[in-house]
Image 1: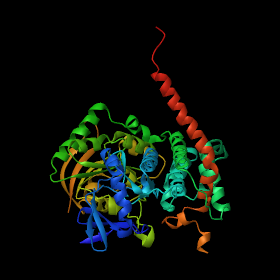
Image 2: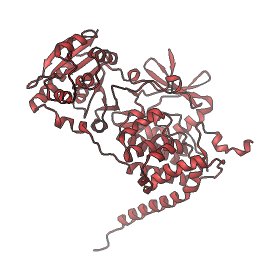
Image 3: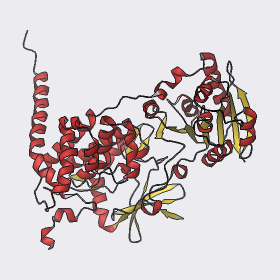
Image 4: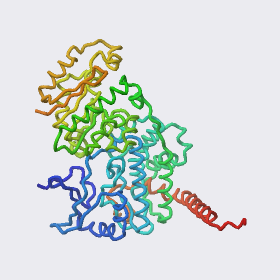
Length: 441
Length: 56
């Protein structure tokens, strides 16, 4: 059955639809010439050969238009779930493609951040109908969109606070430039790129209302792209936060850490027919790496931007910023344009190592509700239980009343037994912690 | 009335924004100047580095 992608409605050139696990792009008759220009200009081969765009098959006539099958990317991760380096990589990819398109007589007609996804830590462009023949003198129509979708969030994260990356969740068509300009410090005006592309741009957006007819040479468009690239390249963010050094601060000694690795590997080896793994609280991806070595495609989730940088740099899988207490909802047009975390991130195996105490004690979530949430994400679960006598839990309880009478290994097993069947349990050497393999009932 | 509307903007499915178009036109010259100098400078450096060594 054909299912049209709920977010694919703005561009009249075509839309994405699914048939089972396959992905197709419908091309409207009016846009066929543009798509053929993308193929015939050599841009398609050029970008596909370096993995910069999803691959597209032959174009076939289908009813009122044309259809091409495109390479599937999994999982779909939205810009408000990216870390700083991911955002930056996506921005630079978009500019790189815009430049290459111009060099081949095409222009990138939009610059939406949603047109970029990730394969491990490599950004890939997914909107193959974003190209059209360049007409001499035309401006870059996507300039404003690029600044709202990429430059504004990166500048705010770099110059104000990394947590402002989630502002894109509220502003799904990019952060308004007047808002970005108001939030940025005055010192950002010293940066020529930010002065031009954010501050002056914001003023021009509000003050210039007369139609603009100026012809703009191609060289100017290349200069504009070059200026944006240099501005993005100079934006930086240094990971901070306790999670950036989590493994240095943990109470494991080397033997316990090695024991935990062996247990996770053994439990993964008992699973058959699994292809995908979702690591919740992945940190630097140390345990995702074991799943990866067993051939699983990994998604590394973390709620700390410092940890996310490590996860992204590891290249083990796709990094996703996730606050499990408030994961991305379904939102946008009719509330379904952008799908929720739970609709997109389902997998075969969930890793929840050193996570449970954060949800139970850190967020007051009852164990039964945590079990139900994890069961929704996948049929297999590898979960670590960290008892109350563990120094990490003691630290969490040091500034609050212990209202968690059920937080014992027996209480954990009783609560999770409603959603899962316990397959095996292993105790970590030289530690009171244990790791459990569970199958969803 | 249609004549008042930029014919290029009519082909775009996203709103280019008059401010964005204005900025491209106004600042384009400055950016282009810097871009050309930088591009040529790298060409000069490249040319210099390829000159045969005549010190011997």
